[in-house]
Length: 305
Image (cartoon, rainbow, N blue to C red; front, side, top):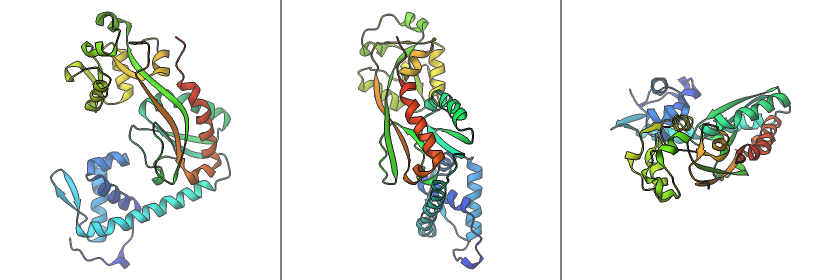
């Protein structure tokens, strides 16, 4: 490909430009494909099509990653500005909607999406049948400025100036296992004694092991006979008696298959609602926001023991 562009002949495709931008930011096609929730071959074709369309080479492959060419580096800032402008137009239009109907996307962790969102959406359906809600189940923080979601349920305060947040609850998590597994494990009085237990792990198991070690539980990879690629899978594996799992107390205490390993919760963390500032002026987003703020504290409460 040559590096000379005739801008008068360019027919611009924003989807291809977005594929280029996210690939540049993520550093690889695989990471960008995950961020955009599309297959890697599809993303690769969009980037290649943009290169063909512009008549330039945007990336060079270095090892397993991609590095911007000189031309790509010149273009990426312009494309980023275009993305921010497109998002601003969409946000402004959404914020001006006056009817309580339309689409709202709510992103939450996998376990919150599976456990908390169904009863909330059931009530929303009764109160505002004109609103359709997409639940974006992801443990990755979605970019609200790019409209990857309208509202996020997060466990940390937002730090971007265009985002607003409201702390609505505090969640607590504990160690859980089946009665059968606890009988095989034998009596446990302290967290340190859990070093002899089997645990169900996560795909990012090093992070989980580090957290357990910080709690004084000296586990190694040998303590993990099974691991789940998502938190719902992790929970179901623990419910099958494969070892100790971790889950929110409101979920674990209500599950008849599980028992707390120790009486006191092991972890506490805040629950925040987050949205773009402009979207809070949208009646449909505001209605969903208010319902989440109302229902989440009750759903997160520990079940009576």
